[in-house]
Image: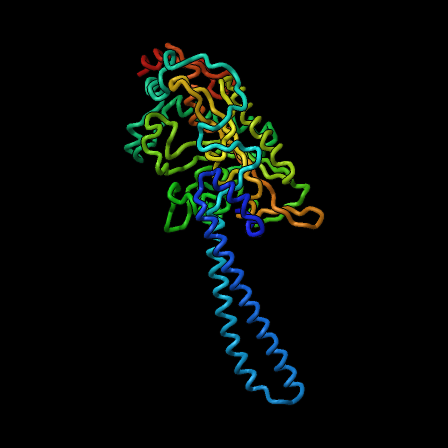
Length: 427
């Protein structure tokens, strides 16, 4: 959530940000008009309160002097009704103002390149060279079914489109990947947590999923609980409505959770395979830090996510998102894209963002520095998307005879190779 006082004093930075983000300017115009209306109503309320206070003083003086004051009391009752009505009008407008501010995205940092969409995202760096293309590797869904790991038919039977059942060594590899990631992240200084997968409305609002993205979420209306779309939601809200001390910061957390997304509007995208599912596993990285350190912390988070792919020995690249592609709550974002041979291109496997105080204002997460309260800065990133990591392994470690297990996963899997022929014979 943006600071309304700052918007009121100088709306031009936000106007420029909305333009660069391809947002409708009418939203800002409506906010400024409502804010002007609120200030007018508040002034009227304050004037009525002042008038009531003067009458109260007048009544007290008349009482003290032994004079009649019944006529003043009658007037005071009328003022009381006017004060109440003025106050209700102010509160009603404040609710509208809050809803308008909640609907505004974060302002991109000056270092974010201006661009209309993902085609304007610059490549920051690449690591490793792709050794396979679509000519040398089966698509992951075909390889997974050949291995007997991916069962799309039963996924559809149990839950519908965009669900899958993992069998045997496929299920074991998924577990091996997430255990490796958690061990790696905790070794980097992140504290592991396992949060609830269902959260309340204030929690979903705190990170910016509500109210804007309600259609993309699964809602249990009877209990007013929401299935989380990412561990970022509960982990960031761990400190909602709390005051941390300066010496408590920074705080690093990592969490594995299943994630649930309706993928509204995504039909036709990544229909085949497990790249875009309604339920998927992800290991998340979340940071809370001092405002002056947040951009350095972002660079560190990206390096931490990269190091997972480096250990897995898979080629990838880092891109910076432009203003037209950056997320709602983010001020600056880097995406890490792993090489997918069957598609002959890089695909996102991690997104790391600095949200500045955008989320902490919504969730009221503050820290005390020299007696003064300030909002913390929050950051989040994938470390990594587990399903997409499996996809990348199935394709980058594939040959005509089977799949080689990455070295860092062999202790978890208790094997170093899986042959297609061996699996066929077992069937």
